[in-house]
Image 1: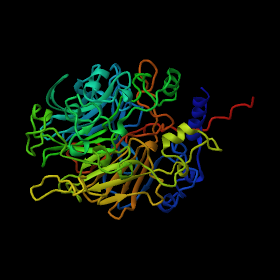
Image 2: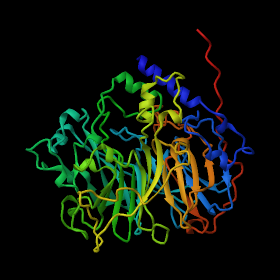
Image 3: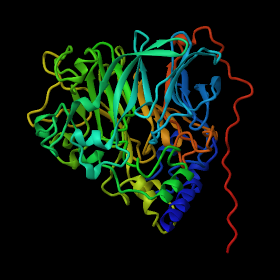
Image 4: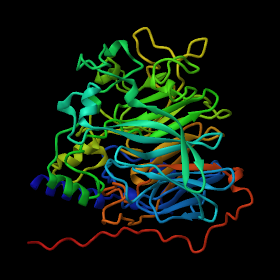
Length: 552
């Protein structure tokens, strides 16, 4: 109990800690000042005392509008580059992300209030389409004790929707698939699958294609299981016993209850399902030219590319489809030790989010881009933010960005291919490249740090919009990696589930944002729309330092 009391005090300290740089006035703050933060300063991880709203808007910023959802709220906001809300969509449910359509409709992932089983953050279970005036035109649910849509969707050119779904295996099913029972939680494990939904309005949908991780597993633990084999000989298979996907130490009921209370776990969390979410796929993107899908799998520290040209039956096997590998992985990148090549030191991706293909006609077209969240730093005081939170043993009873030492980066790279366009392995049996072709790290390395959520995408003019999700900070950088626009989300809401628990785990990161998207001024979904600032503007949440507790 004492450990979690200390942890709670630490989280409060993180929430309250601030510094002069974060509280300087808008008149005094300049782009140079933002960039001159030092790695050993006292900025809080939560950014709760930072100046909020528009910070910087240069003439070089892209003319357009930014779409995003404040965490634990029910609104979707559309901002102009002056930081003013010009339109909003309202709902009765919480959402993490949404996509503006050419007809001005909004397709939104929402968290159904009644789904069972799953408890790892990013839960959805519901996809809705709204017209410009927030009227629901499609309302689709997909959840049961074995399945649940979560984190992200992708709208295909034909109007169908790709969605990430959990795919739960009981302990018995996991054992039959070669999973080591010693590393299997009592509730079993949750793998992932990708489903393609054909919308049938107003409330139905047809699953017309499916790909499942469970069909492409390899393991060297149980020689009696059908998928037994040599890991290093099967780089297109997924090792179900990879160390990165092992369950952590068990928690007590008291500890789980305390974590729920602090907003770090959602209502379905139990002692038995801690560690069940082994893959935690958090992003999906589609390449129409290649008919391929890329997904971000932070539980493995990797991104996977799969073939969408297969039938559902071919997607269960290792042959068929345009590229001949069926549903086996066409490509993977980020952690070659998962397929028996290299060591933990060769891992490139750490808790990454928002993998995307750069579209045709954009600088870097055909390359992949990802927000690499939690890169270890050799001089850090703690191995990660989570270890810092759990340690709670700093003299000041607080954790500073410089103390944690980890940092975030944006990576862009081209997949190596042969003359026929097939993805190839290097001579050492590893999928390349050895490092990204382009990257962005904050000038001080630490001021863009976000251990979870977040994202980035390339704009047509070569700029890149970045969401530093943990603190709710958005920046646009130009081709020279100079910041040309900066905005901090000022909105905080308190939407909760019927049982009073949080809708998404945020802890002290009360301004957090999963992702933001910039739509250019000429986007067809905005044509003919009234895009003047709404009056009145939504009320920002101004955090105030609570009075100190009286001495005992």
